[in-house]
Image (cartoon, rainbow, N blue to C red; front, top):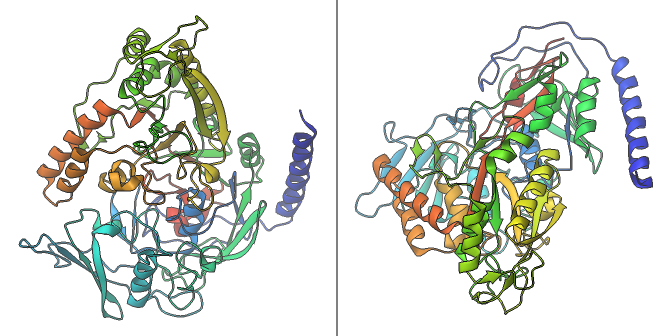
Length: 583
């Protein structure tokens, strides 16, 4: 063990001791009646327990604005303090937050124009929601948020915003969103898991959506208010007395502690020094499943799929046409990579029985497409590489470009497989196994790990993916809710290859796929399914990404907590206003 690690462990031990002494000195709570777990409208009863709830996460949130890079921890704290027009429950159903109701065709909130193909959605806001300074949340805030997002120099592309021609204020609590085409995911354009409404009178329009100070010092209209933030250590949140739901939240204060090591987070939970572990890995979930002092909440449906992202451009470039990746720009190499990976073995040996093989984006209802599962066949993989002109000409076990068309003759077949460090041991072991499997077919694979905030940062902050500074990445993602269209646009549309305009970081472009994305932008469900399944065939043939298996979506929490419910479509704090203490 290095001296730095020793010092880190010693500091952690001291912090745990101090925290334990603090908790012992707090007053024990009496039991209270409990709400229905996971219900966004369940009544919360005040509790006499004054001890703060402690959530442990591995790194600081980047900000309170999850739309910038969706790190996960930013969304967690955002949901504690800020509200969108809507949110999504664990079953994928959208429910109103700032909105007084969901606009539909039936209630007149959605109007389409058959002649132009345009659509107008009218949102009615609640009249009883206030910012923490007492100012009301109004239509001006919605209009301000839209203008900030779409500002040509300081804005940021969010899913679906290119479908919007404008937002009109009808009255103090009504806005109309004018779409230039039908946008099926209109309910989560200004809500869902990444987008909230920002206060016009508090945030600085001049600073801009991605840089304004309120991204780190938000004015709350949600259940909690940020009291202090010590980077690398903790964040303290206190109950918002002006929160619009009477009697909520029931818990007076929440502390978010930064604890990098997963094993330490688990130990804190079992020793009573922590109450919630966000995104408990398969290993942690397996270790805690029979613990008397902890519960594990698993989302009722799957969403996150572990996948490989291959840069079709040369590392450090974002233009495959000018600088193709010497290895992955040939589809036969991508196909060989998929054939070489034994998903079943990885699932069985690493993921504790929680993972399920997945090979297409369309594996969830209501859009399931019949794409045959690919076989594990390393010999076929070798044959594909031979056909692509990659051969081991010197007998060292690593292939070189012989007659390949994407690299100079003699170029070795090399790739760096990068993962994000926060996930923990299952991803580390999967990376090692995949590296070994690819070496068996003649690819020289080096392994690396970086923080998610580095991998997924925006272009200006040096984000590795946005700048094209990667060769082969592996991480998990999947679409929230029931509509895959925004996710597909974000990851596969040609327009999303531009830096900071989406996450098509492999820089794959396909005109037929782009047309199908347009065809899927309809309220006609039969047409949507047909378009999605045609997309599935293109993705299966060209492999801009290689999907491997679903990963668990679980949150662990102490037995003194009630109401914590994992949500595949959001983060653990989606219903933080409903959390209570059992003792």
